Image (cartoon, rainbow, N blue to C red; front, side, top):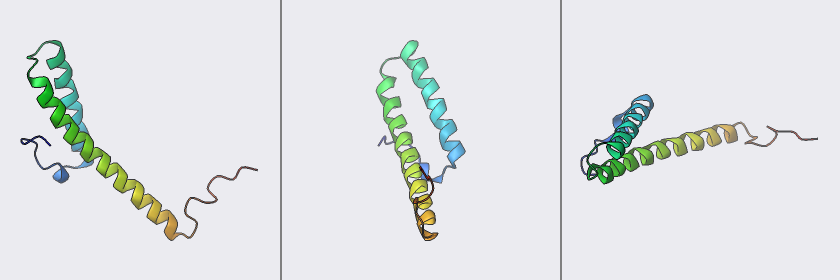
Amino acid sequence: MHPLTNNLTQLTDDELHKKYAELQKRFMQAYRFGPQAIIPQLQMVMEDYQAEIQTRNRKQMDDLLKRSESDGKGFKGIIDIQ
């Protein structure tokens, strides 16, 4: 975790994705034109954003699984191949 990364849990999903996209742009600019010393710092911040995105995606999948199991079926019977 980069020490200067803000608390990412307070961001909405849209804000998180927009800021990550902005970091990707800055990373590519630094890689092409900018100072090479900033690249590892940007990579660490990007890893923090990726970890938060993965955590949220995992939580959404767990919630979907719990909701589908509460119906009594789970994912059984969704695809019927016969």
